[in-house]
Structures are given as structure tokens and as C-alpha cells.
Length: 253
Image (cartoon, rainbow, N blue to C red; front, side, top):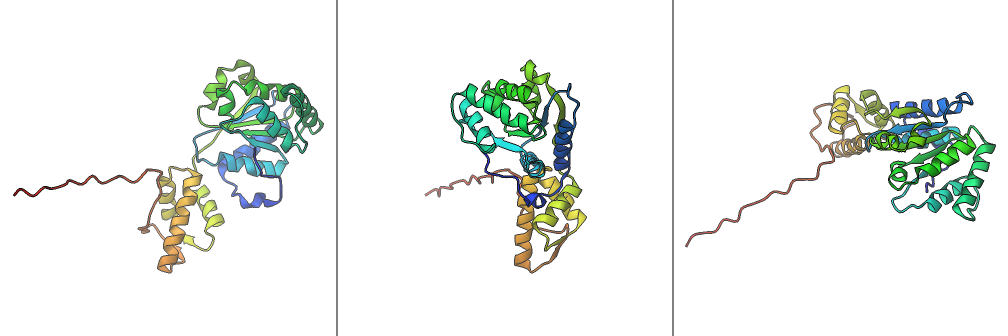
């Protein structure tokens, strides 16, 4: 269950290209014609900023957002959705589905966003989401890893109800600049350094933010307010440090 509530903090998330893609997907679902499907999917590798894009869209649209846990059951899912809808969950799973459908149907433009939706497919629970989506007709956004589309293909009744797909893209220099302006506004960073940060981070927003923090720490230690591509500090790439294997030399008597 997520504790992120719609508020006025949406400006704290940089408007990266994946944020724009998420907003476009949500708006498309909200503005669709009545006879069209009401499920959208954002998918892509870990670290591309899908969850942050979802939080941004949640704040902008007053969406319901839940993040599926590894241990979740059908009942846990419905309890999370109802809690986010602002009511105390009660009854059987069927009772909770009925109540969720009723509440979502009352605010037909209010999106339901489900992060880590891969887990629902893996657990055979995605049909529960289809039922809620179909009966309420509320916009439903499924968010997951790059394999999510191929997993959904195997669940035909859900796959056929997808209106559009939004593949998450790696960050580019423009995205990296926006993240730098947000997280290290005190520093002036050259385009060349931003390109290095983006490349070494493999375009993953989460790693870019980590590397910007490393640069900020380096700048503090060196008393610098501007850093260029000559930066010789640490880059976090996600690779674990290699263990050096040393030989034990025995002295021959």
C-alpha cells in the first residue's frame, strides 16, 4: 500500500519525458470515448522513473495509487484499494470488489494506478483488476517492468482491454539537466558532464540522482560551485566492487 497522498507537492518531481508520457496516458484514458477500453500500461526497466511518474500523475489527477507487495493476496489488494479510497475495508473479496467498483464509478475520471502490476500477473490476480476496471469504467493504469506486456498477452481478457501502451524511455541530457536543477540547484554542471552522468547511469533516473549526489559531495570537498566533464570523482553504475584476489607467497626455506 502506498502512503503517498494527492497534494501540492507535484512540483517536487521533475517533468521528465516519462512523466509526460504517463500524464498523456492518463489523459487519454480519461478522455476516451465510452466504447473504448479503459486500461493503460506503462512498462520499462527498473530505475527509469516509472513510479515517480506515477506519483506525479497521482498528485495531478487525484488518482488512487497502490504498489503491489510480494506477499500480497487478492484480499490484500482490495483492502489497499479501499483504504486509498478512504474507507475501512470490510467483508469478503467479492464484497470489497463491489464497494471499490461503486466508489470508482462515482468519480469516473479518477484513475486507479497499480504499480508493480507484474506481480499480479505472476500470482494470477490480474483478472481481479480487470473486473474492477470493467465494472467501474474508471481509468486504470498498470505499471511494471519491461516484461509486463508479454505477460499480459497470456491473459487475453486483460490484454484485449488495453487502450494504449507507454514504454518508459531512458533519461536523456534534457532529463538529466532537469534532475540536476531539482536535486543540486546550487551547482553549475556542463553539458559534457551531464552526458557522462547519463551514460554512466544507463539513463536510469534513480542512478542519475545518486551520481548527482556524488558530484555534489565532490564539489563540497573541493569548494567548487561549477563542475565540468573533467570531474574525476565517483560514478555509481550499479556494479558491485570487484574483490581483489591476492596471492599468498610462501618463503622457501
